[in-house]
Image (cartoon, rainbow, N blue to C red):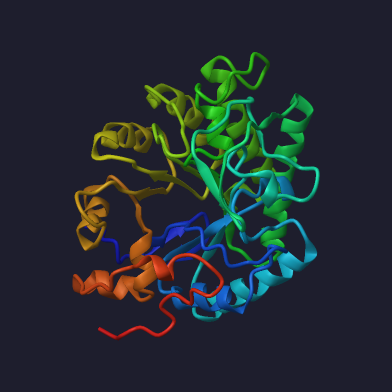
Length: 354
């Protein structure tokens, strides 16, 4: 019987176990988007995970949606990430960069002068985003032209190349949680009537073309995608998502991607998860919806065959040695808000042993 503590191969990248650290925004990079020594320490501490997926990294200046998030589009940023990947590899870890373009989620105050958030369509998200001046309402995004859509796809591919140059083992495109790729997938945020919108076949085009462009640039074995079908986060309206996502996977299945990473948003979404698992032929990473905290009990999903790898979020913040604690069935340190965000939040750099 396969367990979460058995190794697994990601198209040539060997993982020591089937426990992944899910991507989590930290906002520690400063205004220039360069990860520093604290970032290297943070990820290196968690190198016992079979796979680390980084916080979301913007592929371009306009792709930034939160304060002090890191980028992968300048030489200085690449150099900063090179220190991070070296620290993780020195401890035997594997690390993928999550490339995240936030699209309409953001604010002009977070962007260089003259830029404004962009999206699939000029549909304003309800809610606010945090800026250095405090929370501010989302603005109406500028609709990308067809040429700009293709330029944005090229930005994803360029960021992926930069990630490999920085020493990452691969990249995960963020197609979940209401950010740009998800905004093209969802009918409530994609009101286009051109080749990039309207029918499900057109709404999946941006996601499919972005994945294909990255795979062509760095190889499919280094390329992955994260999805969250039906997720309402960031004011997404996506009723009946199953068929749209199955259509997307039919295009992606033959590529030989490193993995597919699915975020469940509720126990009721398990039916969609099973359908995606059946459609995708490669490694299936699951961030499961659970009753109560996601802990060692979720590892049974590997034994049941629903997933090949289980990813954990906040539990990894407070427990850098999480695989060891999962094997022991706990105990677990509890995460708190003070350790989550900000350049002064060291997180659990000193933590008690089991």
